[in-house]
Length: 151
Image: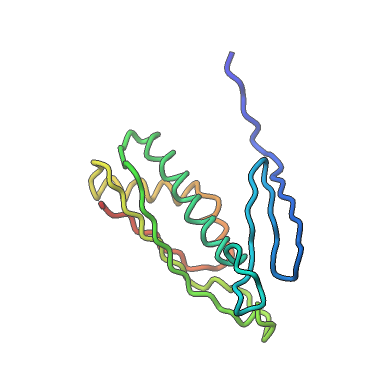
């Protein structure tokens, strides 16, 4: 008998915050630090919260992209992903409230597997349907472009 996975789960994160800029995060049994650079009063022990959000998008495209490729029978190999984001800092500097702080982001995904350029484009289209972080950024008003290329 197959085990049926839950369709909705609670995600849990804990943080100890020893300073105004640093948060030592625990997720499951994994720990990491979110911090600000020294120039902004932090200790530079980890990425900023906004860097972490962009990194989460990259990680999600990797995971969901591989799942979609596997489901489609397309061998994409390993991925190299570069992300560039236009970020409106007026909100974090308290200059004014900003509705869309991540105004635009471009991810360039390079796959080293045998998949054709056309197959990679199909994987990209499927990935957009399922990647929760892509959906989150788009729903927030970010113009998100994800380009899939052969390495």
